[in-house]
Image 1 (cartoon, one colour):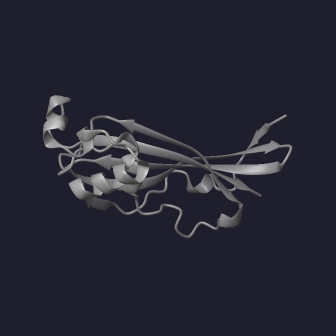
Image 2 (cartoon, rainbow, N blue to C red; image 1 turned 180 degrees about the vertical axis):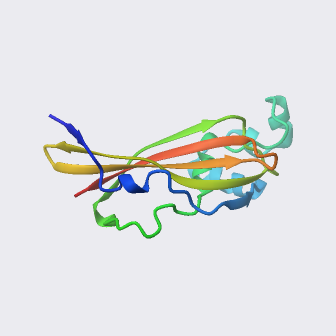
Length: 149
């Protein structure tokens, strides 16, 4: 039976990183889709992108992982040998396009602990928020790290 308890990282919830600015480059998008093996021409061909309702070459949904925020965990004592990647989520307010300039800020969004058969584990939810040049939200990328005590 799992019991919820306070995480040893609770004091860091809300901590943000310094912003990082990215120019979303067409070549970066193309290398990314080649690496993940996506042959859809919408990511390579301007004409195919326009036929599919895009104003430019769009980035694929998981591309947000390539726009890493500065790490808000800096200075937090974590044993990375005991860390597992738990889950990943991407929420887009609008498509991300080649030519966009976005500012990405990392944040520790949540921290909690659970006790199970394997012992106590801390869960650390990290969020990367990207805004465009007008300050409008483009995407939020969330990942959950599981750290065994």
